[in-house]
Amino acid sequence: MPDDDLRRTILNMLQGVEHPREKAVDVMYLLQRQYGYLCDEALVVGAELLGMTPLELEELATFYDFIYRRPVGKYVIHVCDGVVCWMHHEDDIFRHLCARLGVRPGETTADGLFTVLPTVCIGDCDKAPAMLVNGRFYGPLTPGRVDEILETLRSGDEERVLCP
Amino acid sequence: MPLKPDFEPVLFKNRRGDRPATFDEYRQGGGYEALLATVGKKSPEEVVRMVTAAGLTGRGGAGFPTGRKWAGVPASAPYPRYVQPNTDEMEPGTFKDRILVNADPHLVIEGIILCAYAVKAQRGIFFIRPSYESDAQLIERELAVARAAGFLGSGILGSDFSFELSVHRSAGRYICGEATAQVNAIQGLRPNPVKAPGAHLTEAGLWGRPTVVNNVETLASVPHILTRGPEWYKSLAATPTGDGTKLYCVSGKVARPGCYELPMGTRLSDIIYEHAGGMLPGGTFKACLPGGASTAFMPETLFDIPMDFPSLKAVGHHLGTASMIVFDKNTCLLAATINIIRFFVRESCGWCTPCREGLPVILDILERIEAGEAGEADVAWLETMTRQLHHAYCAFAPGAAAPIEGLLRHFRDEVMDHLDGRGCPFGAPELADKPGAWHLPKGGRP
Image (cartoon, each protein chain N blue to C red):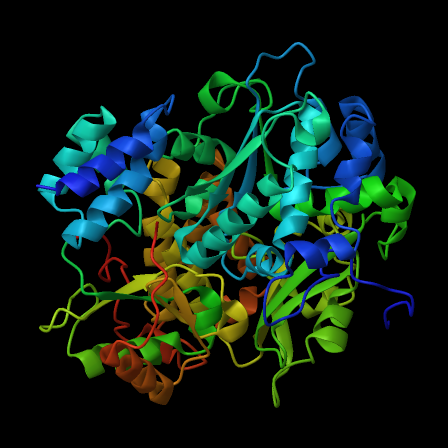
């Protein structure tokens, strides 16, 4: 169950809001942050707080890219596979990243640190090929640069920009 | 053709590159003067008239006249009314709104408030994609500054005009850039587009109330139009058919990819050679998508076209978001199209059949052509299926059709060179078991 603080935070957020459903994405982000991903329990709790059925919230949760219905690592690496990054050999970067981490797309490393996901154009095309890790852009990427970024993230020095 | 020597950036006036302009910097450059000269001093109708006279066209891709959109809110329309600044910006190749918001957040905020004043809106909801979370945080921070200065909230500048503006975080899906889908998204509904004959968001949008959805680049042009006048704004364009300045994104095989503010109607060749540094060393221009992935490939023969909405329309193309994705002669445009269609397959909301079912079939045909497993009959089938995309529910599938249509219209020989066992003349290493490509297995649906 979400702790009392989180429940209170969510109830405060919904307090006086004319249409609570408007906050559905924000509520999912908050639950996801606490649970690490939007697990079934979080979905049911979120729906209840929002006055929605679990199905109504599920059809939003599964619609969106940044709501994770499966467990993810501390760092979710969204690798852009838009056409500009494709032109700059994003596929090589992707392959290199997966090989380095020993995962396939969608999987999480055994230490729970990294999840790799392909993502539509992230809007960093002037620095292609690019990726997004917890709200930060990295580009232009080379295999060597990817190794450096992974090292920095492992050391925990990189500041995260999280929603919300 | 070089820029006029007296050209000064308008939207990027305060762009620094390393950090956003602060409220004070914005004020020192004349920021919020339009608001001060408007609220309680000009009528909302006068603001709509000026924006209409300036000929400001929507920068989100459709090029719809902004003044006409605002005038679409009926005088007798109920309250509350809403303004919905759109920073979903998920069109591949497009990053101008991110740069704009980051360069001068208060220019965007002032534009939004002026729009609200013009349509008598009480609430603004700034819709932003999750990839731009740092921008969302920046906007929230600067909204508090604007509120403290008395430019937001109740009784703005001592008038009876009250307006609140807040950020709505999306969780990421391309279709949310479509205005009606975005209205659903904000209301916490599944973001399918909504179409009803004769219905307009300006009459019934968010919660059934009048809602004006505008791209943030469009809104950021408004303070300047009000301060310096419609005639001045029109004179900024390079062509009589253009209006003001435009943020052009250039990406792909160019030496200096980036976002450039230039007179609307600047020639494609000038954008690429004068501003984006020309092609990468050794590269030769082959084609570009002029306005993101949902526009058609433009060939070299159109290299000198003025980049404004009417000029492109006249030659059967669309300016879209004016985000030029540039391809060189060594890039297989069929492989590029496969990448683009894979994007559309993944992002289709699944609501209607031509889009949900048609796009995967098209992807399959394209992949078989690329692999040399297709013949002329498959190309004919591709054309038929592409035509069907125009029968879809919203503009998403016709957008997906555009690059295929451009490919077949201008680069048919390149497509035909793949047929009957020949495969990709460029080698197409890109198609080899790319990880994370969520495409169908060869041969169609499992």
